[in-house]
Image (tube, rainbow, N blue to C red; front, side, top):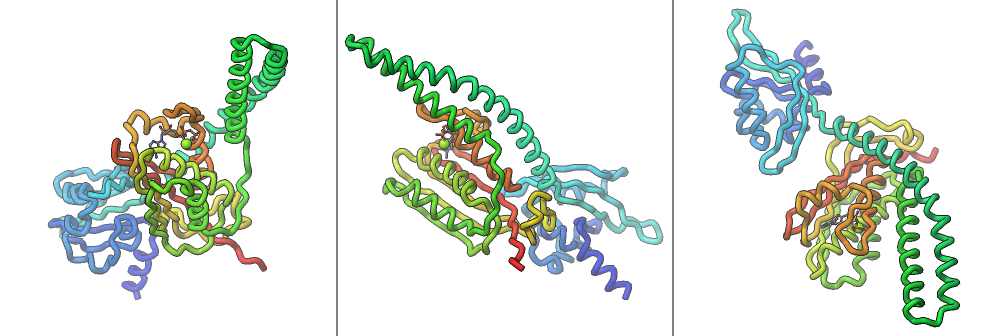
Length: 368
Ligand SMILES: Nc1ncnc2c1ncn2[C@@H]1O[C@H](COP(=O)(O)OP(=O)(O)OP(=O)(O)O)[C@@H](O)[C@H]1O
Ligand SMILES: [Mg+2]
């Protein structure tokens, strides 16, 4: 009975737990630990060496083995572990405790830990939202102040153009009108970006949204080959119009980065979530479940970005294109953040770029 209780306790514990002996052999590994470290069958890991089982997180084994050489073990420490070769980065919060026998012989080390990566992501999401609110207020005010005088300039330039016979002066008036149009377009896009738009949740299929965007942006690009690997994902709650706009902006950029053609690779799949069960209050009327995350990857074989460009792509109005407004990426990030997701990007100059949108999978409440 006691053993059964202990086993169930370990299995259901939210905290992850690993125990190793002084040689690094795993004595215990619970389900949460397996999930965080990507060990599929935890029972098969017992008896094997931690170096072998946690091969993709070598630093974790270093930490466990080092625990036998130091006297005061870390308590409530944080650590960023990087997977190899995946470069998958996780922040874990951990505590280590030595385990002794009745005769005070050191038997092993217990490592209790928790994946803080998603907690960190949520903090970043909050910061992005705050920044957007203040930016939005400023931009809305500025747009309002500019729009009226701009309308005046347009009317006056139009009057000048109509009465003008000198070709040079007509040309100048026409230039003014063109520039006014360009400014108006920037203002409209800015307003569209900053205007608060409530997320209107609907049941939809993420793959349909991807397909729709492909039709929209690739119809006239026969020089781009599309490779798709889309998992069968059940319907989830999303604002399909906003999500199509976000994904569309990403796909548009990828196509623009492949001026001489190339390959666009789309993937969709689901992964377990550390925030399972946690439903944001604003969504709680609609959502019944949150247990996994959807990952959408959009990759191009285009020109890629240098690090200094990458650092700025989510900054509103940053653009390297002559006709660009620099709103596409911030808009995509805003929409994904408002769905409690996260947008990640990796790029290799001269080789291509990969965007990764991680979205919580909110499943709808039934109609009754
Ligand atoms: N797939 C990509 N490959 C290379 N560079 C990219 C890619 N996506 C974005 N960028 C860089 O990020 C910048 C910002 O992108 P963003 O979509 O916000 O604006 P834009 O494309 O320049 O203008 P627009 O408002 O028309 O979208 C781009 O100008 C480009 O330098
Ligand atoms: Mg763009």
